[in-house]
Image 1 (cartoon, rainbow, N blue to C red):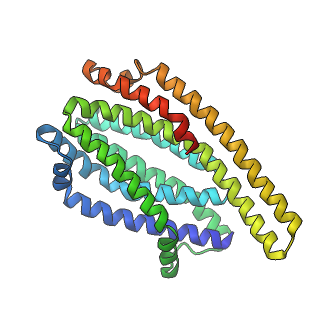
Image 2 (spheres, rainbow, N blue to C red):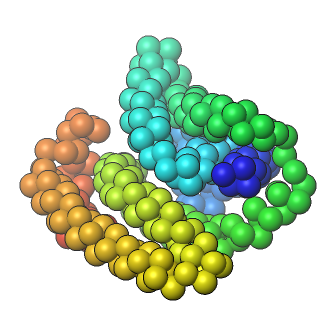
Image 3 (tube, rainbow, N blue to C red):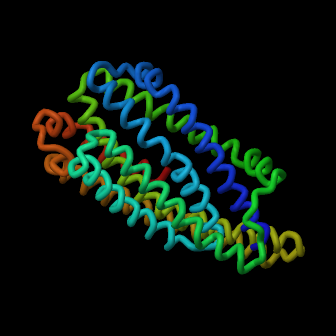
Length: 296
């Protein structure tokens, strides 16, 4: 547990440092980044304004990811769920406040998101800091730990960057189709995010349970206890079967909800009729893919 907390804290520090570095560079080159996506005129102006406001929240969001992983290791999946839910509500309220009450426009939406992400990061780090204090683990970063986190996380880093590039390429394609198509894409993308994070809850449970079982299996192997090792292997198989069954069922159920609501779900985002109409068929395509997404 002590070593796990040390590794988790090093991962959180690494996430914060990467977030600060990437956010700083992206804020400087925001106009060039937006231009590379093909945005022009008012779309480009709003995109740059949004990007520069939302980027300060990037360290917070990366800390959320690292802290969530640490809490999974502690078998605490409830805290990330509560923080994610509270963060989504806070994000919505802050966006509406800065967008409409303060009158900052699209930039206000970015500011609200940044503040929500930083708040979520702080909320998730707090219980880890308490657990570290209880185990007498220092909160300071360790150079060796940062290097280890970078090495261990390289595969996951490449995977996430690849995923982001794939998503950004779809934004680029939507931008080329005009402002209405881009707005419609954002509606679909937002709903996709909600469904994906909901389905992730099952993945989190599977990862936490299998991680614990693998730890027990490694300990049994170290002791040479073949009976215990076979028991843990069987437990892993049971966890996988149970989680895959739940996942496929939930994926189908969520897909049916999205398909059934494809006409009215866009109303939550916009009163613009052309944007709502364009979102209909992509939402059906998304609904059809959700069972596969859930299993993946």
